[in-house]
Amino acid sequence: MECNQVLHALVLFIDNEIEDQNEIQTFESHIAQCPPCLKEMEHERAVLNRMKSLLSNECCEPAPEELHERIAKQTALLASQMFSPTQIITEYRRTETTINGETLIEIETTHEIRRDFPLS
Image (cartoon, rainbow, N blue to C red; front, side, top):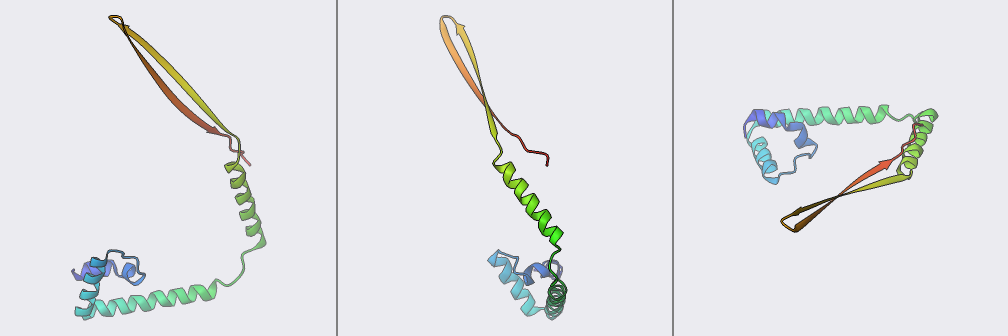
């Protein structure tokens, strides 16, 4: 694995987003043998940890009551839509062809599902 490949996937590696075990081993092997990439990984890890720390410290205020109400209203609307009346229309088509005394019958069925969603 080349340095540019390692640097492009560094954040994914730090966040444990890489699932392929061979790729992880190749990545770890490169980091162990390449001091510049190791230094960059340590720097990226420090930056990500600092960002996470700052965000967690800054995002401690509760959401406004209006937001809670809007979320509850939208959730109730979605729930009502899920249980709204459903109409299933089934259409049958029958084709009968007789050639030389032999009759061939084809039956085609189509289903259409309609659901009415209120516009609230």
